[in-house]
Image (cartoon, rainbow, N blue to C red; front, side):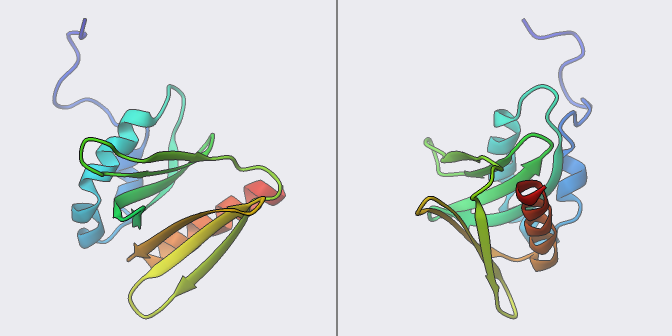
Length: 137
C-alpha cells in the first residue's frame, strides 16, 4: 500500500538527480528513460556517486557508480538490459575518446562489457578513476 507521503515532491533518496546534474542537457534528455530504469534497480542504502549517459547493447543507457557497485542499464523498450559489474580485483577498464564522445570497455576473465556514445567525457573520466581506485584499493 503506498504511503500518504508518496507522490510528487519525494526526495531523491539515491542521489540520481545530483549526479545527473553534472551532465550536459543533451545527455540528460537522451538518458531520461535509462535513468528511470536505473532508479528502479537501486536498493535501500545505495547512493549514486557518478552517472554517465551512454549507449549500451544498442540502446540509450546509463552507467552509475554507487557506494556499493557499478551498474549499467539501458532503456530497451519492454526488456531493458540491467548489468551489475563487480568491483573486484581483475576488472580492467579501457577508454577511448575523440572530439565528441568516449567509449569504455570493462573486462574480466576474457568477458567484455562495452559502453559507447558517452558525450560527457570528463564525467566518464571521473567514473573510470573512481572504479580503478576501488578495484585497486
